[in-house]
Length: 296
Image (cartoon, rainbow, N blue to C red; front, top):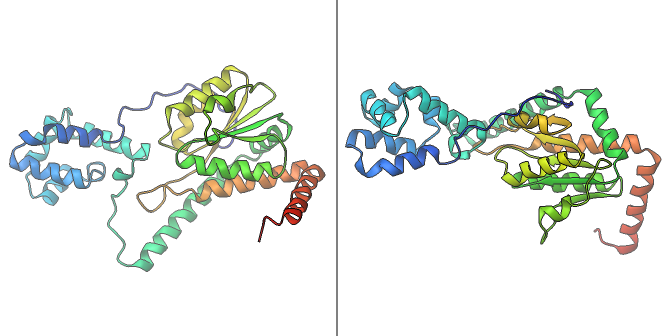
């Protein structure tokens, strides 16, 4: 859904975390017949092939037979090749980089750049076209009126959370980042209530602490805005607004160009709503920059 209040039931994430396939293979590797070991070696090098190739194709690429592929899959504990493929595709959806390298490498540096640019433009377009203006205005109004705005994010999302805190903090007081260096998340979350807003940046491969923060904030009546990729829709019932943002780029790593653009747009819309108040804060900060000489 677009940025909106999104009631609904949460879904339990599939049990297909990183290394699921690799752990199965390595646990059985020493006892594998040579034919199955050929397939196992291929999947250890290219686990994404299980999500994108048929059993026949895996047999051809590994130099084994289709029967060897079937036997290996069953030996690893899967009921069928289809179940093994579902496990691998779930891992792709979850964002594990080792499951993302499914495409053939570009023929040249120029074609690699073009593919990278096309993918980034695509996720930017899909993200911005998916925004719901009414709900987005509600989010900006909540950020404007809140007593405190706490921004959280972990792993790659921490970079985006820091950027969001910096941009919003230029426009209004009371914008904080948690956890700060040397602190725990609890120290940042303490004291949040119905007058406050939690801006939770949570792209895929989220840590348990992120979910705990959402639960705690919800229990305390905090209004929650979550910036996340489509996989975060499962957590919509825990928050007030979801801002969906695409992140699947051209490489094995996720791309956050759309997320940066969204945060920039969010800050610009907040500046418009704050009007003279926001401009006065910006002028004051610029004046201090001049007095301190802290920018060159």
